[in-house]
Length: 366
Image 1 (cartoon, rainbow, N blue to C red):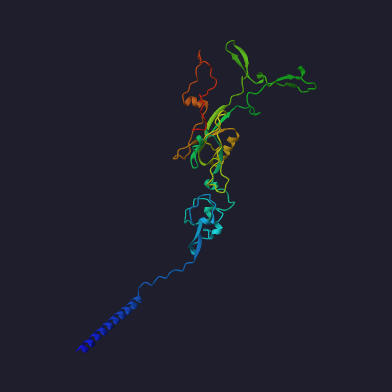
Image 2 (cartoon, rainbow, N blue to C red; image 1 turned 45 degrees about the vertical axis):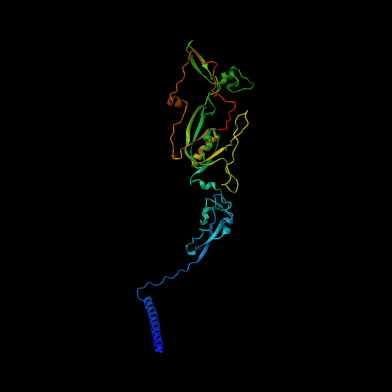
């Protein structure tokens, strides 16, 4: 009886194994048929890209820094997407160049981002196309106490002293006069054969200056009036540059790392009595102007004009139209009258205007 039960148990196990094998076989057949079924998408083949190495920044590279191997690394890049001459493919080719701009980490290095040795200055890349740079000699009084900084916009004001001159001689008026004598009346040197002899004038005598006849109102007589002093020039001021960008305050550095060197400063003297102390200031400001305005500024500088800067608002970068200013303009616009001649005056007499000073005042201290 026991032997019959064992035999039936084995038969059941065999049947189960056969069923499991049949299920597995059926699944495999169905999977194979499904893979070959029409309309099923074919598996995508992995493309075979050829990769090359390109140079990237491994850390931040400040503008003007000479690039060395320790700030560079390489990454893989598809060769078919690499435009010829765009990226550096060798670290050795990039070593010794100078960064035109600030380069962030992981940014690929291109030829347009660096300057090769002997490739010019970094400053030239800050000047817009079609513009030029001009340097003005300045002081705290003519450069808004050196408030402008690189990137600010300024106006340039020019002031000139004008005098009347003889058109033919190009000499200042009035002309000097001389005495001429006919040869028949006598001469000053033996052997003079010209019809006229010119008496040399004495430059120390004011009467040699050419004057004019005027009617003296008291005696009603004609008098010959000559100038009592040299002609006084007339002052005129006008804006000669309406808008210019500041490129640099102070001298440009000559070192290899142009971004790390501070502008050279010159000491501003306080007074003859007081020794210079405190802050030091640069002696020049470089601005960006058009080529024609550059020529105008050169002329005004050589002609002795006084040029000064006016700092503009950060939101105002357009041209500003101004009127030329003369003494008459100020008198009219500001309603300044010419003082009357009174029968009394202030004592003691005042010939020069001087502001009161303090003994401990130093010019270059704020």
